[in-house]
Length: 325
Image (cartoon, rainbow, N blue to C red; front, side, top):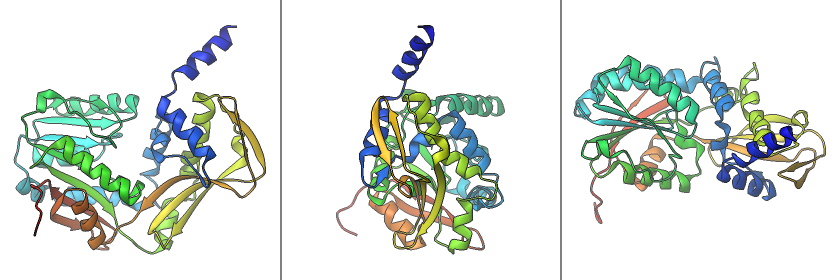
């Protein structure tokens, strides 16, 4: 009886949107579950491990760029602004921006509450004179920022090319939501991964050590744990492919055999070779990136890239909308 009560309590604590996205996604053809549900505590830790892999160039390339452009950023941003980071994770790159622009406040926003609180404490300890206001929320939607910074100029920070995880239309919607959250006149520092040879791209999402595979498969473990799932984890394998037509890396969970399972007592069957599409990572050329930002209400004002053109950091401004050039 006690075990059943504990299991019922755990199920009732599942995020309602997670439940809806999983149940709906498993009925779609092709099947797909939004990538944001990777990031429970285990998934967040695995992603941090991914960023340190030799194959995963985006993190180290973007970090090197931020180290190099600090003085340029300082010239573009007035000191004393509030730095708002969307999808802050472990906030490992944040000190590079804080040191450069010297904000009066830092507002990290993330869907993973445990990691958010932990990383916020680290930042607060490092910068005791800066106000740190962690905000647990789904940053893909309009966020009402703390009133404490209501009258403070704001600069958004969206590193990691996370924008690439979204299809173009939702990416534009997200950029517009960020503009709405930060307000007209605000600025945005955004990382965007460039299109490059698949021989570089694919290993970054299918590493030799299998860390990305574990990250992908952890989604199934989360479904079993939080949604009373009975998915046999050994019946799926990680796949990463380059879709040249859509300029994106795709991650899938492929069934290695015919399999049947339940999620919250709803039955599902998947045949061998069928996949659950779990993530996209779109890559943008220079012109594509500028068009996307402008469509989202942001005007690019500066851009930096590494010598090999692997990755770009762009500074954009929420200028007043105009009906003509």
